[in-house]
Image (cartoon, rainbow over all chains, first blue to last red; front, side, top):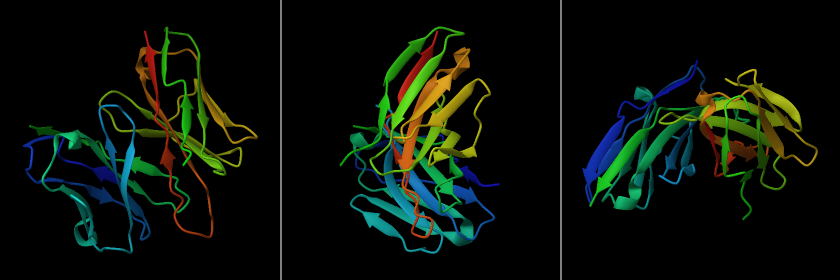
Length: 115
Length: 116
């Protein structure tokens, strides 16, 4: 069965620090999709990135970057020069199904960026 | 661009009452998913519908039922509410392209249900 682990329950950093959120997944499928979502205090789920299992290229989007390593089943998320507005719960998620079914979230990491 | 609409955004009910949550998918989307997120928890998949038929079932209690209507909107009906049903309920929609690329799920803003 698929599983997503986010070992860091809570992280606190000071503004402008870099921070990496870890995500480790388990799946028996060779085709799967990985996601990161941000959930700010207002509660909505904000899509950040999707990566399919055949694309191990790292991605950078502004201050956000993602490191996908199949060898270690990890899909880590780094925020550089963190800002107070980055404070949120971040969820890593996995889907084994091309139809978008079987969408499993990790337990989330609560990031607090202090001024 | 149009997004997923959920109503109501907030709902307060008493124990043993019933509640109905509504979800209006993005226009042209044919698939709807429901998730339940308890306090401090991650979202848990409840149920999904494709073309008005149930397509997958997760950890949905027997007290809950759902359906997708001809206009593709969906309703989640919750009966005999319990304190533990207090949660944020998300709806997501997607357009299934079986021979295409991944079918992105777009999440609504959620309905916060409080059971007193």
